[in-house]
Image (tube, rainbow, N blue to C red; front, side, top):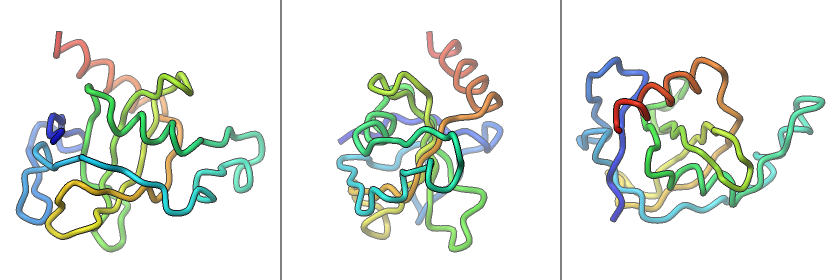
Length: 130
């Protein structure tokens, strides 16, 4: 079971998700139930589409960052920031757990390229890990 994560957005405070510290959430398997949600070019002219395998690569990045999704209306989603070697980009991946509390299976809701602020935060966290 892969539980190595680093919280972000929380300013160093470890948040809870269904009673589990966010930095200890299990990520064993990820699926993409609707790949259409990754077709960004259909919503944003000129945007690059994200392949399902690239979203999954980002989730399993050993240096990924994880936090609750601050924009989630239900409070159910988490954001994972991770690097996709196949896309050669840092991605933000929105995940929904299969179970509550999470047991390891997550579903990709959507994903997008990380903006400059998130890339800088990832680089800062990466530098502190070394």
